[in-house]
Image (cartoon, rainbow, N blue to C red):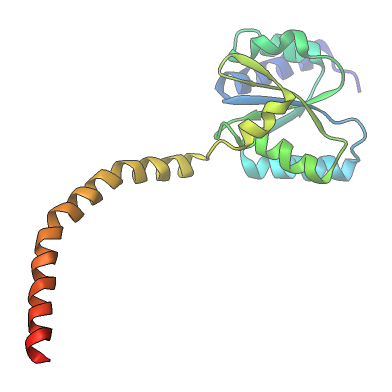
Length: 174
């Protein structure tokens, strides 16, 4: 179904708003996917906080014009589905990578993050990025480790004295 000018403007505005707030973009070829498969992909995208859209490349070019994703404008050719990570930078990469494992028709074409475009092979790198909760957990572990080490070091002399007294007690009891 062809879009009229007003619908195209609304679509470009929606995509520009999403692209302005998104952390990363994964564009993938979807030719050959059935309606059932596309519906499953869209459901996984909703659950994972990923904005998924099939749109004309010219409209996407206009939408990403003044965003960090402007670098991908020249590479937008052929029928593609666009996955924008809204909450977690690696969400779009995980979505495409996981879905492509079971559906060989979905092929990543490009990845964009931080104002740079990367080849499709970087989907694995993007997918391996930790989620916010995982990153906070790793940060907490790194911050907590020196404090734990200091506490153990300070407690060690008292522990050694306790062990020595216990050893003398056991020796006298025997």
